[in-house]
Image (cartoon, rainbow, N blue to C red):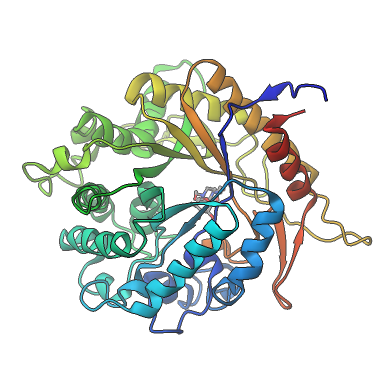
Length: 448
Ligand code: GBH
């Protein structure tokens, strides 16, 4: 057999990723409480075509079949999230044993199939009851999150080797509280920056709680990081790019790995907040040592100054070849981000916990879903990840988003990210061409 030209180290974690609200459905079953995404998706106009996660992929009932598909795919690991409102329906207070039972069965089902579980504690489904007391604008939510983390860890800590506290605090804080395109649909920059801090604090407190519970597994967090470049070397464009980099990347990386908000944060956010919500000791908690760091990569931005707001604003220059989500395909951005994290922030092992491409997939006359563009996307991003490894970046895993088509937040079921196709009316899953291709990557431990 010829050696693959892009070969990964033995033991490299090839995975696939999902999140609870996007796949589970069964939103009113077995004592699950409601979450901000139930409320938001049922708000007219919030989600494309009024789609909701009420049924989604019905994974709550079809998990065995889904785990069999993961086994067929050959993945070594599976990244899923636990729905906080299944486990603690009101966010704080009584634990719902039936909710924990579901994840207990899921974890055992993975282990029986030889698949390593990677568990995300929070992928955006905050219990609605906590939103009613202020949500991420309220510091108490961080404490409740740490309690919830302890409960999940108490039940699954003996079998789950990889723990992620939060998925993409940027999206929770900014898309949810500044842009208002995600739950809870708030549009207030002061609240958004407060939410950044309380999310990071929740992470820090959860890490402490997991360690206190004698965490045997590796503990980390996933951030979505972007590759940001000025559109020209005009100083105004360079300054705008630096602001976007602050807003999207450094507001998370600096507190996590340098125990401080970036030095330009105070001035940039001064019109909305004086950071009075930061208390003594918070940043030490937030920057507590981790075991690995998860990177989600989707977006590369070319940035120009915004003539309407030259002091605080920026303007994204559209990509030359936009994709259905308007972003374009830029694998080099992934290599850049991995290099940057490793060089400027942390020597920790890194995992690409998500990257993926939205398409409007459909079955051809022969029933095949020929997502060649997605194959090209993953080929490019796997090469970029390998390039980073070759330069010494300690990358230990790669998880395509997503295992299967699912509820794509504000876009509902309107776009598809899966390597398995889901026919929602029948809930039939079909491997797309990309799934067969990815199975080959896993078998070869690289690209032929
Ligand atoms: C991740 O978010 C999430 O973790 C995951 O749940 C989600 O399904 C996945 O990405 C895909 O979106 O709308 O033109 O700005 C990352 C944030 C937001 C990245 C939407 C891709 C599309 C580009 N995602 N974005 S655009």
